[in-house]
Length: 145
Image (tube, rainbow, N blue to C red; front, side, top):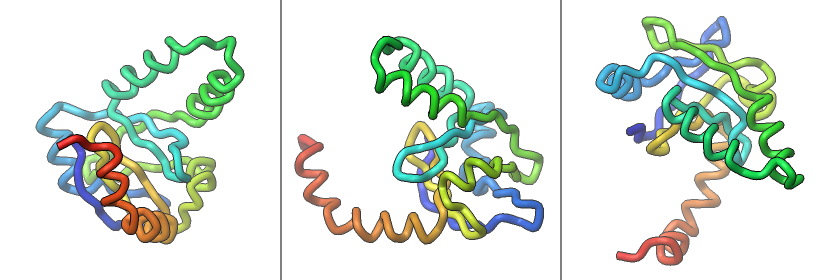
């Protein structure tokens, strides 16, 4: 549903703008509300409300008697906040999530099918450079064509 890579900067009020391509997708699918939380690899995950509920059900089904489950759920859900972008597509990422992802000013928003990831631009560029070199090897081990 969400695809592409878009570079934006925080505005003077600390807001990020949802790329127009993502806004078009939201309009087409009737999406208004998102949930933000701590992502993996030091980014912020941004889920539609529907996808958030799907992920929440998956994590709730895991046994809370396992230490790793409790730890993950605490960090994942305690970091969650809901947001509705304004008419221009702007929304605020809470400071604690910006701190977690080391977001200062320049960001990259990437579409990863069922979610959007918000990265600090330098962190993304470093991740991309390191991952791009092994992209073909990863594809060979994951994908059966």
